[in-house]
Length: 267
Ligand SMILES: [Zn+2]
Image (cartoon, rainbow, N blue to C red; front, side, top):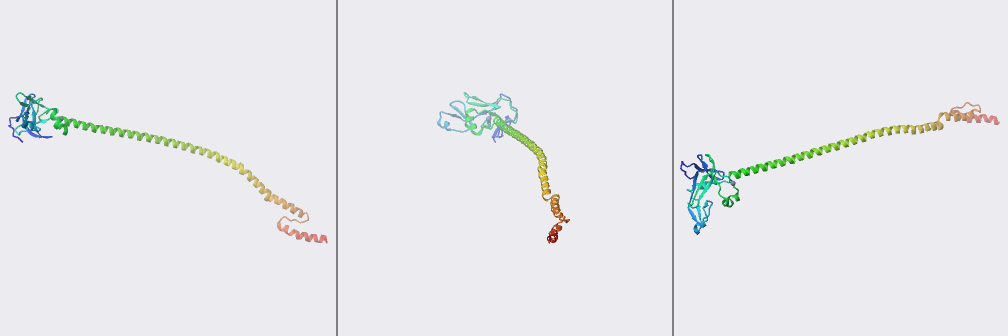
């Protein structure tokens, strides 16, 4: 660090971009803070014109200050897009002063605008690191984050809405299906009821008749009464011969009896 007399209102210190010049005392707006100085380069001289560094301060077409010398404390002043100081150029005197354009408080970094040419050549390619540009970038990042968050929230809201809509539609469909199923089962029940009734009616009416017929047939064909009658008739014919036969053994026994009986009659 270069030694600076204590009566000066500034010191060299660490800045976000390396080293910088900081106020150590309040500096009033309009005050000359420091002179930017160094060897004068004549553009008409080939040797001078060949010199290239970041600390060249062009006074006019011909004269340039080479501020790269260590004694030039003003070379520590960093560029800012919204500075608190400016370069006061006196081409005729071939002098440059840095002057406060705002009231500067102790601890504040002193800055001035290096100008468009320097900005384009050195700062734009790497991105200006001045407070204003950092603030702008921070704001832009915050805005980008906020926008991203907003879009995310929007997408989430949309997704939620969609899911809710789908769920609603599903529920509606299910309710419809349930209703349909219930209606169907109700119809089935009523149909079943009718068919059961119908069947029971028809089975009664249908099977009632066959049963009746069957029973009639059964009665008429195998019935005891009819058989009984026929037997009775048969037995009756036989009984006309003077026998009291009702049972089968009696029928079996009859021929013998008849033949026995008939034989004497033939004889
Ligand atoms: Zn900037």
